[in-house]
Length: 269
Image (cartoon, rainbow, N blue to C red):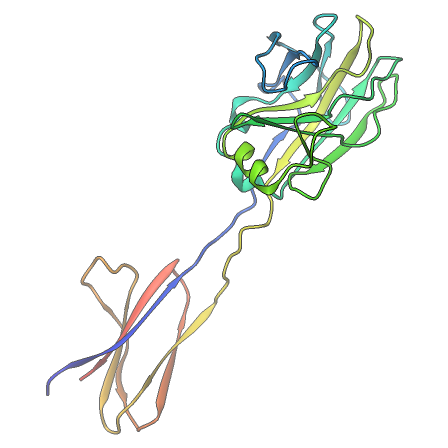
């Protein structure tokens, strides 16, 4: 009997997402974070005017350690700068969060500086994360959503709201991630940083399937075989069901999903 292969091909591809994050608790050192000086009168995309400087690691704080610095130079404003592993292509962090703790030792509070600055693709996005931290070294926790429809602005805090396209542009080629350290105007202004967490968002959809059914219209007394393979570039088919007798109805057979993708064929013998 001539073998016929029904033109039934089922390809199932699955996208899996795992949570990803960067975390710095500063338990044993500065973990690559630095301190930089910027000119507040120039665009945040402009070159640094000072630094990078090494912060001081302190074995204390909300967790078991933190980093601290005294204002490196009087005049420019200083920020804590994330290490290079935070930078680069980070568009998959759109919709995620950046959380951190800061404390300040300055008695006078400056209220016109962004708390977080993201620079990339020739753009700078800035945000006011909330009320400034209390004086005298009291730790304050912050969390900002990395998405539009929040307080993010293009350029300065007085700039227009950041668009989705601008956010994607910046995150796709992130060059700087800066957390505010300058809170006062005194030459001895000091600040500390701890518990930085950059968390990936949940905007990537995935398909969760535990079982599929392969169905085909059968002819009475015909014999069918269901085969599968996980790659269309090979010629090796693996039998899944053999000697299935047709009865003139639609026949279905289940298969447990155990691979990221699988293809099926039904052979009429």
